[in-house]
Image 1 (cartoon, rainbow, N blue to C red):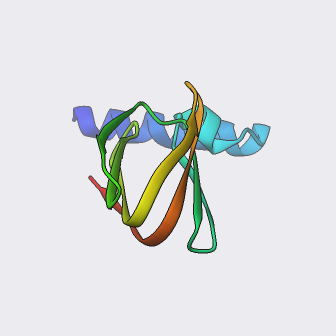
Image 2: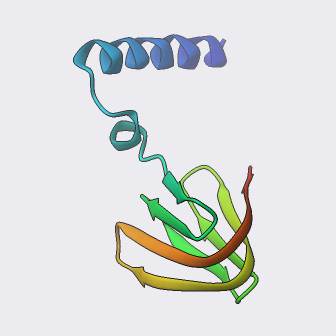
Length: 96
């Protein structure tokens, strides 16, 4: 019964968000990952850095972990809101 109520509330929330044309990344605090070729990744709305090496960088987002794999990986900069990773990127994986 509780899941039915939650599902109805979620549906109403989605209708309101859609009708007001609010950005979903802001409303849901979702991570925004922008990939530029195989050299740069820009991540917004992340929570923290869990692992950092020149081959793997693992970022904690709200609902998942974002794993960036490659070689010569380097965090160019990071703030409370966003970060830029550069290097030769071979893959990005979302772990739920």
